[in-house]
Image (tube, rainbow, N blue to C red; front, top):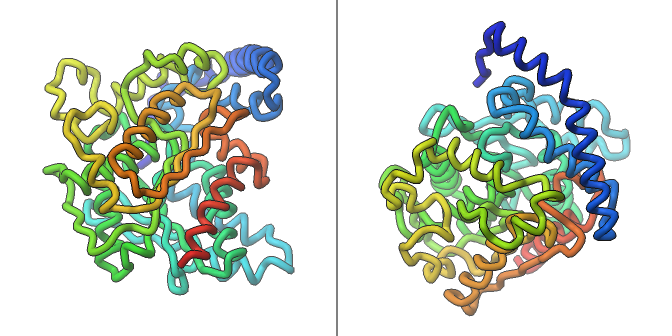
Length: 379
């Protein structure tokens, strides 16, 4: 839904735009200095610095005004991909790229299909990141094409991606997105897709939403449609997932200056998602919101939901320590689960998107593709 902007809002935004290049340049200089000292890839960390600067320059309303809505971006990307595909690859692209939208039960969210779902043997239900306040970006479409659709082509197993178009914060708050994610999975199951052919996952806030949905399936949230699986899901992936409201971990202190995410940003988006007075509310109100913060035991039920999980996180990101903690707890509670943990030594937060922005299969995308292919070949 488009954000309404008054003339005063537009004037304020224009002033921010005037100052933005100077702020972004300062962030790039600082990011490159730290990356150079740590012997990290400078090009990626220059992009990371830009991504870090933008939330400090623009607030959520600015971002939603400047960026095309999720569905518009999805339709535009598909149109451009078809238009610019080479003759040799056009047959491969054309059969898998068409705008295919399925509205969900709440009338405020939809599934945006990517790939040929009529021939798909595996479906990826994907939740995009962006702090719950940013719509789908071009980099997501490129990432999904490379990591899942092309992985399926290379493994000779057709894959389709079901992108959840969810409502954005601060316009809505928890548990709205959880209810929409649950509706999306329920829709796939009711349409006849077997759980063993469904992979769910997301990045950053989308990784958080994935964890919320797992928590809901293990321990139902009263406001979300219940999900009962007849068999485990094919797999679950979490890329740089946001799993706790904590900002006191050592990784925040170590990486707050170089990662695109920082403690102030996490506190800001937490207040947007849970409400400005969330710390004064009873803790059980947000029981499913952050899996490391809940007191209810639920992780021991994960192996009934899936026996394959992939989690990646950058060594140089602020969410590193909570991801390590989550992996340790999942492994302890589910000793027979096949959990692949990629602690990527040179990377920071969500670098799959930076690789996708450069339109290449880098280390992060290749790792994701390898995991996906292992499931496709096994089945």
